[in-house]
Length: 366
Image (cartoon, rainbow, N blue to C red):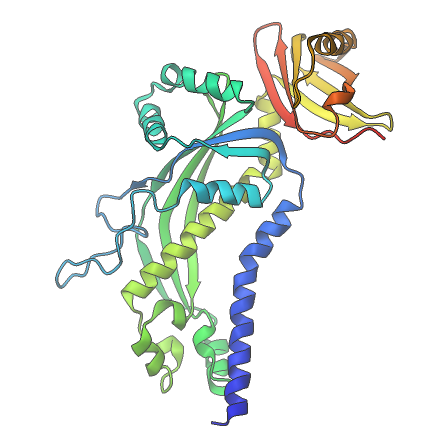
């Protein structure tokens, strides 16, 4: 084999690997281009393992039938770190502001409280602290329900693998075997006023296609010199590691995509006591409130804080603007100048005591 042929094959392999690496980043980049949800969110709980009855899963690893030893290193009790959830939400610009509960013990305790059904009573001090810190919603990573990896054999890409192996010698890079992860991640969005669930997501690992380099060991790669890659057997440890890595990343991407989807926006609007939006008709940003009940008060939070007199003037102007639109109440007023050009939290209370909270991003006045 000539040096030029080897160079061409290595270049092609590099291009294929680079394309695979860029796909995930590109997916988050595309997601980040859309407008974020108008909320500041505190993330708590965690992707702590809850294994199935057989204790065989994507993240804990299968057991060798010969000696009972693990063919994949056992993961920690939190295989998907809470910081990875935070990084994904920020990279996808899912919310205007997102932070994480830094107290690991508290993150564990919250999950236990939810299972015991005592969330509302136990949550109140924590919810109050989160409200005081300017958050609108609570995102709870409830549980990582582990599940087994199922091998589904050679997939429909084997002709491509064979042709690439014969012509270019890089068939080992073509995903030619399919596996299925039964791992599931449950995440809820909760109201910070009461702790009640506003939105519930069950994310699944699903089918994963692996190439020979991802599912085999050195011996398998050497075997592929003489045998087409799709006929080379799997190395259980390599499969477990690859599926675990892909599944963790897939669950995070699913979470970001689902949360930023239009259906979630719609459900959160419908579940809120009032819709809080900004409009700009050329004279600067104005706050529009559309509520099912008349408002009793309105509060603006920004940095630096808005003075008491400015708060009062804005509240009076907004409440005085009320007009009926069928069975809805609509309000609109110009934002005070100090609140323009920075993140702004708006809290609107209705006459029946319900509270709507949102974090908005007004633009500077012209």
